[in-house]
Amino acid sequence: MNLASIVNNQTQTPEAVLFFILAPVMVLSALGMLVVKKAVHSALLLAVVMIGLAIFYIANEAPFLGIVQIVVYTGAVMMLFLFILMLVGVDSSDSLEETIKGQRISAVLGSVGVGFLLISLLSRAELGRAYAGLELVNGEGNVQAIAKTLFTRYVWAFEVISALLITAALGAMVLAHRERLLPRKSQRELAAERVRQSAIPVAGLPGPGTYALHNAVDIPALLPDGSPADSSVSKTIAARGELANPNTFRMNEKNEAGEE
Amino acid sequence: MNPYVPILVIGAIGFGFAIISVVAGYLTGPRRYNRAKAEAYECGIEPTPPAAGGGRFPIKYFLTAMLFIIFDIEIVFLYPWAVSFDQLGLFGIVEMFLFILTVFVAYTYVWRRGGLEWD
Image 1: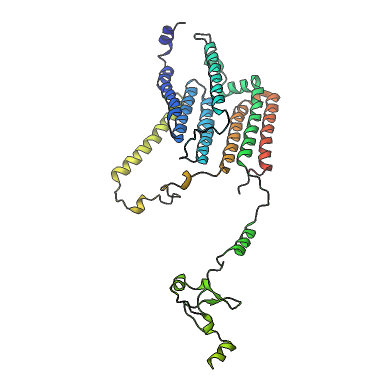
Image 2: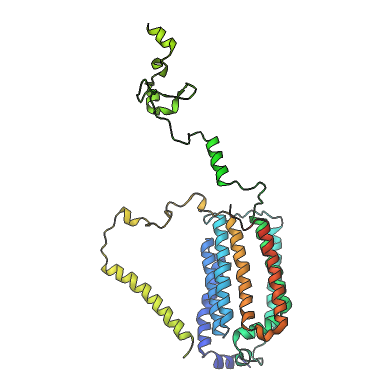
């Protein structure tokens, strides 16, 4: 089948119209994702690509796959990307310094390898091959067809996915979880600690004035041991040097003897 | 009727409602701006000025996000299985049991290591 007949036969369907509108949007978004400077914009363009892919799945009569694409990729994976952005800090810029030794070389080698893999896969694709058709594949329902293939032919791949999920959980635990070495403090213990360690009295600052004999804002209150409490007088008064000495109002034998 | 027509109609109603609400508010509402009106009314923290360090999240959320993805993917596989497990027979039950068992290894690990505790 040559190109002209493909164009004549297949580009007039609504699906083809959808493809020719959506595909450039997706390719431009994918390119923009690599080009834009802000990581958040890159993530949003990635979301555009993912939603476009989901629309293609639905247009190809794979509604379950389309919804899963939205739920898992646009929902969960996108959320993870945005979480990472917020963990790192939205405004933090990329460092061009290599933190892993030989990172650049291995990145280049890896991308060249993936590129060759893609080329070899795409070159094996044939146009105009006989296909089963959606009516046959989706005969008993899209989800049923997927389940039948997934749980019989690809059962090993399906079981291996659970190992992948274990790896994900383990990696997250190793990276993000800090082991608790001491038992967690209860609220009562925390409160007791706060009272014991605090520099500020728990019951508020003591009021000024020497009780029973004199009461004025410039006289420090007396602590239970008889010493003046500096925190009971306003700092302003202390700064002005207008602090009165409570000992002058003390009723004791020495004071009485001095007056006589 | 195409099953996507109701979805499109719902989408159009939602979109139209949003547009009409904004336009109607713009056309009919009085505009008296003041300081209090510009504030985010009972909507949490003030967005400006931005928090120091770009408003970074604690790393603890990463674990939550990852656990969410794990169970999300589990649900994605459970759904087609639940739809057609009567056709898959005993084999289907055994393989799903194995799958859930393996995922619960991860879950138990996270649980026993205190990954589910928030402190």
